[in-house]
Image 1 (spheres, rainbow, N blue to C red):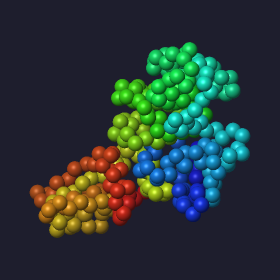
Image 2 (cartoon, rainbow, N blue to C red; image 1 turned 30 degrees about the vertical axis):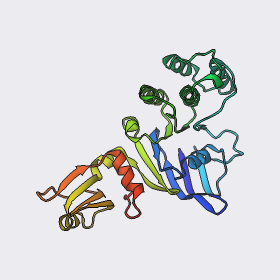
Image 3 (spheres, one colour; image 1 turned 45 degrees about the horizontal axis):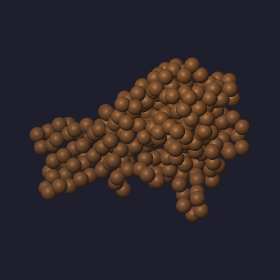
Length: 284
């Protein structure tokens, strides 16, 4: 379980995380979305105990997390993670030696699947392969929480598909909390259970994908018809082109009429509307 209570993080006068209260109490694969600078990496590093927060508390399985916490129960890998310049197979072996719960068999199986040369030193790998080694080490750790920051950087399309398969297999084998920060939204939708949207240091949305499928819609038509249909609904965005208006809602959709076009929003369009407009917001 990960629990954040009124978490803030400031660098000088700039607040990167703003009074975040969030409870993740069920195993699952969670997707963390946000624009560049939204605070995603800062949030993950804080949960992992890589840096101290300015205010509030973070707990993992009831243990308060700070930089002095000996065993946080969290495995975290950031993009461009660095390792000792040792052969890949040696890195996996060292990871298993320092962590009794490490799943070396899983790590070895994934290394073979991705055709990683166990004799090649880490610094001689491509960016994508470096990222894959880091991700395998992180997933095989079997910590109660696994945090992956932009894990598909440097992956081609085939590697990304294989990565999502690996992620699902790892979770099925060892159910726990896995949080994945990514910019490639639609690809991960088939793998995750819940979505967290971070916007300007605050949690803007935390719910299931099913809630988006059932409540996120665009309503288009003449302004008077759209305004009448969406009155009292939770409007998260709005576009006007010529005499036509499109309102984006996160609510029970209005009834279909001849004067309206109502369509479900894709995950990407929902995200754009949630963080790309200054007004509106999804009910939690």
